[in-house]
Length: 550
Image (cartoon, rainbow, N blue to C red; front, side, top):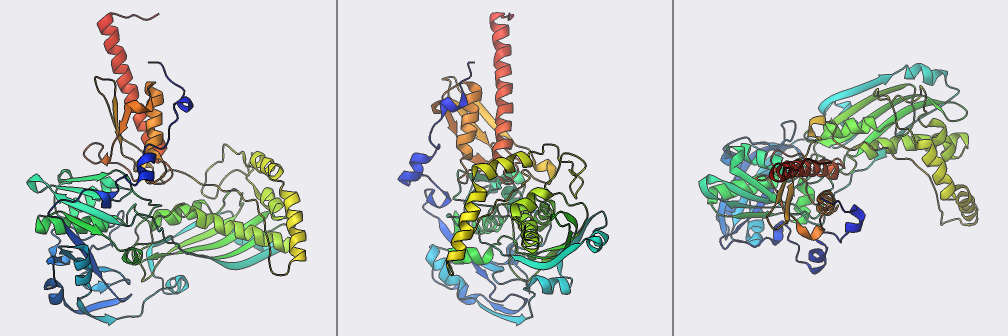
């Protein structure tokens, strides 16, 4: 086939017209079955303690209520933890954070379901919660064991250094605030199977966790996702509980169930970006070159591990950013607190690591009264022995110096800095600032077996192509990019390609759409599938027409 140039085959976003016209269908826009009922979640109103007494009789008798379920109604595993256990669907007795689900309701309307859960009468025995990172460290309250990394002898290097600094830093948390909130629609099928429409970044694990909860085989659950209205990591694992609850309610009522979470409840029940506390000692030279760094990285993980292990690991991997640290003594605390379990968020720990080292370099710059851009440049990785990271990786493609020098010139950094300095001298209240800062970010999953993709490609007899893969469209244009890859490889127009909803029935056992790698992984899977098709076509043509080539 003749291959077109990819960029001559450009087109608007594959759903652009649907987006601007309001006809793009998200989970809550799917045509509702006539007998649809609605779910709502009742959750704890204290941060730590035990349930002394619970009376749900007023909930059961509330107008429109069809079913009320608790932990006793879970036939399988009462846990949605993605890697480690510890995330119960409904708590049995212990309360670990404000907003912990205790029960769920199915009613004839969403409004009636939400009104019903408020009628629960629950008495608690309250205990003092751990809310602060420092308190968690003091009480040795951790969701996972601390991790230590050492390179060289940081303590000695700091002592020998002419200049030293020490300090503490904090980086705050952040809510994902995706435009489309958490929502799931479960429709019962034949043979006790279930079709689940979910706003999730991870359909395959949604399928698996639902199956484990209702004690059925994975193949009895089908999860389908056409698009989600933003995720940013907040729907990588935290969406599971909503799909499980909607499916449990559907199983017990034999009716379709929609669980659409109110925005306030969404923000209460789901985790955020990990906030971090840092404590450091650094020794450095008169030119600002770091000799040794002793540092504590401590994050507030919440009540359970969730993805905190990998997130804190990535913070460790990014504490150097683009800088060579000859000696480092690092300890990473994964703190357990009585707050909602924090989770994946864009950058996945990387920004928290880079935030710390950049602040340290700024403090060195201020202490020595040397421009921060010079301090940064002095500490960059080199192309000699100073190119080994603190975790033992050799930096092969080191282009930071060329990029940095080019950007300083192109951005007129020095001129603009002088202008800002003069402006600040003349203005007592309004101030300006400027900085030039590198960012290192390692894409893909640190759990390496997750770096895989799958696809399904059909060619029909009229020449049109059907395309499916394991990635999730969440506003990043994934479906458009994958379509362009396929069109370019086939040498056909984008108009001849139909890309359809991500579906566990079509492409199974997929990784989450995360780690900035969804186009790379799924695009490569599509290329692999098309390559096989083209080889099969070439073999057929050779046999059919006895073509021997040149």
